[in-house]
Image 1: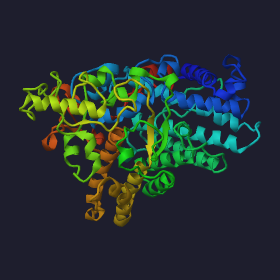
Image 2 (image 1 turned 45 degrees about the vertical axis):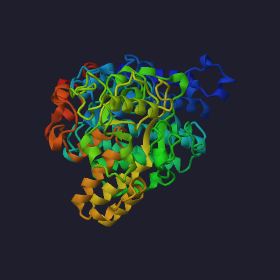
Image 3 (image 1 turned 180 degrees about the vertical axis):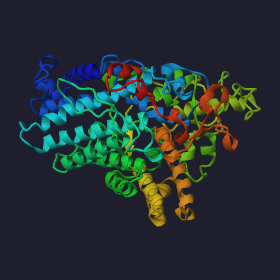
Image 4 (image 1 turned 60 degrees about the vertical axis):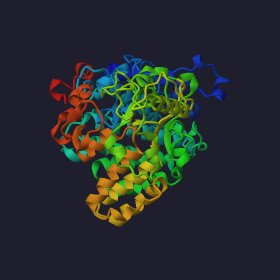
Amino acid sequence: MIKNIKLMLFVVLGIAITSCEEDFLETTPTDAISASDALANEENMQLVLNGLHRGLYSQSQTIFPGGNTARAGNHYWVPLGDNLSGELIHSANANNLGWRDEMQWNSHTLPTSLTNRILWYHRYNIIAGANLLINRVNDGTLTQSEKLNEILGQAHTYRAYAYLSLVQHYGRGYLIGNPASDPGVPILFSSEAPFTSEPRSTVQQIYDQIEADLNAAIAAFENATSRPGGGAAAKSQLNIDVAYGLMARMALSKGDWQTAADAAIRARQDYPIMNEADWKSGFNTNELPEVIWGSNVIAAETTFFRSYFYLMSNTFNGSQIRNNPKIADRRLVDAIPDTDYRKDVFIIGAPNTNTSAANGQGGFGNDPNFTDEAVFDAAVDSLNAVYGITTRFNLHPYMHFKMKNANPGSIDPDDVIYMRSSEMYLIEAEAKAMMGDIAGAQAALDPLGSERDSAYDSSVFNTQELLMEHIKFQRRLELWGEGFGYTDKIRWDEGIDHAADGGSGASAVLYQEAYQQDRPSINDDWIFKIPQAEIDANPNIGPGDQN
């Protein structure tokens, strides 16, 4: 990793000096900023931070040497969680960007795969940039200020975010393993030469570092300037609410229930639950009131056919979607009460127009839901008109329109949402249920459930077992498509079985080995392989360290 970290730090600076705000560009040409100038003062350090913000969604070859145009940061990593866990179901065969390989578990299980390598180095690139800022602020030569504390708080939050992502993918789940001895990932603090590679720290040591970083972030934010407003661009800046939200996620994943509940309550306080119109608007902008944190994707840096919506939104004008509309697990959709407006975004009775559909029921005459061709054609026209797509887009029963492009049928960029207040209500509910606080868990569920479902009644879930089953259902429904399926299944120690309980709607032929997977506690294939490139480059990690 020595060479890669050296190169990544130069790229962090490169992103920073090409990501200047307009007012800075008016006075200082981007090519006139040297590496030393990038850390000279608060204004320039903010540019480094802006580089980290944009690095979250840029194509990876712009972030570090050896990157690849097929992976555009969190555009790929966010939906990957639901692609791997079988929540986001492919209706037909399509392999753009390796998305089918991910679904079939033919990527993260291979040490030489692009996904394993790029995710590893993308997250370490974030750590390298965070180290750069943290070490500069703490070197004692800068005058402390509220702005400097804001930069420090964001840097610590970024580092915690990256380590949590790494340990949850490349380490065994905290609740199903032995964190004191299970290998995690290397901890690195360097921001200048000589760089030293490190062996894998334990899962526990990584969690300790995450918690320390989040505590440091919160302390810094408490004496910092506040986030500049609540618009889409402002929400790409991390703040104290993001730090508390990550604290809630981290604590939930390790079974620290009280910390999870307390942090979740604190994180969500300024982000009201969305109403029906907002929830159905497409999840395409940070402007939504629930959004605590997300990437504001600017038009000048669009990723075109590498975007989140290209991989999973049925209104994006790309072949991955047109040829392979994404559907939801029909067992989940069928369980949604008719009084819950979230059911409306899953089109149970959509006509199956794809003659290459994996279920073999594509095209009129094969679709058992339609016996009249005129009715079939009218249903196609109606859906196309409502959602702004054309006959170039295939349709399929149980397809979703939860995520919709702001400009449907286009390839325009949209924001990538990372954290919402609904998640925080669900974290509080799960934590309290696990502590045996039945009334507390019900109270946490009520605001969310009663907004979404006009007949909602949490009192019927009056035991820990009933509560946990209901919370799992609510997470799968509320957060569907937002990438939580993979880590949820690891925390709950649940496998994948597309055949059980009437079937999910996935094709066994298309899904292959991923059609059924044992639960994570007995199946190490849930753990991402350490990239072979890291094993080859790091003298402290050898073949025996492979997952």
